[in-house]
Length: 516
Image 1 (cartoon, rainbow, N blue to C red):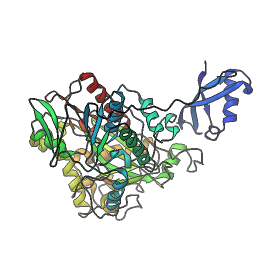
Image 2: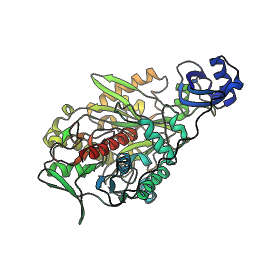
Image 3: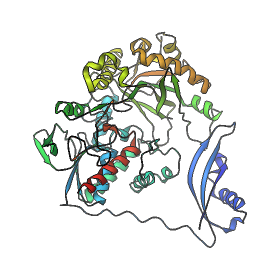
Image 4: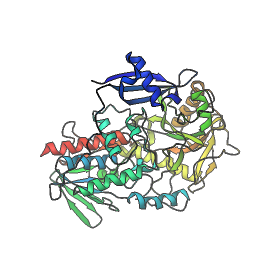
């Protein structure tokens, strides 16, 4: 049996197998020549002390035992002509639901409002050059979902039960680096994830599944409290089981459900700004040196602060990253962040957001269950107006924001459409600006140098999660009012990120199989 144990090494030592063999032999009290094979199972950075170290979990085989060969490639059965299941949305939930349905002997038909990943790039270029926005093809909508072009981070704090390692292995089998199986915070990168998504698409098609792009659902066919299919423009698609995996930005779906009297529920969400520093500053704070060398990745951070009972926290932190324009319609500014696989841009950005509960929505309560949606939209429209009614985003230096001072000028930024100086301290509602001001100063105490007027706040970060939940039965996962309709993942309020969305997609597929 192989031995498994943890060791601590310097960053430059982790890449030297001969040194790791010596360390393993020392730990096992044997000679290095008896180490037949060695594999790193997990790798994480420990920067708590003056000198940064890496924690490694190793699996070691002692001669004559050797490591087994590579796992066989998973073979998906051909399911052409089998019972069909409709999946609305080709994000991680929809794609992994399709793969699981194929394994279970069903034929998935994915209906996606946006374009395939290659065609989608042209629409992103239009947004980045501030030349227009396609409401069906943008950073949020299209093949692969929002994560495809906004980072591809694969770690999750979700407590959902599911095969996280199996999800990672599926990504690796479709072209992702094997490092995601090892790193504590696995990350594919926006430059590499599209190719992985294309390979997943080919697996689905080769197994007999179908994918329709440029097909936005405009109605649900419901009769006698059971789903019968969906409508896309003038076309009907009939099926007795439908997975609704549209993501948290498909507001037209929430409005459709509301009009059709299909139950929705309000839930907490978070909103705020995206904050950008120079990456060298974050490296210096976290690694105690601005020169991290070739062995350490750009430093990240995770921050949280309670302010008068409200949580303020960092969200989707992107070291070496880019702030992206993620609006899904005209007249709105929405920011998010992403990093390429090398994370080699000079900036570090993160959402810094404030928790919002239904009780905080005040005057928006007249909109009933859609109150949170209207709150989000109003803040996005405010940002558009403050940015000069263009794709430029309103921005303010950090210290200026906290002292209610309009910034005379702004630092350089990764946000390609450009920034406009604006009094975010005054434009944002007090339930957001107040806690942000307190938390940013506290973050500066936790990370010396973080609170700086060289950092810039960019408005607004509004799509951290859905303000609504589409309810479902705890056991069957069906909507309680519409049998055969399976609300799924982020858009339904049951996931947050690629990994938990993929797991939820698999769970819905398994629930459908059980229903037959």
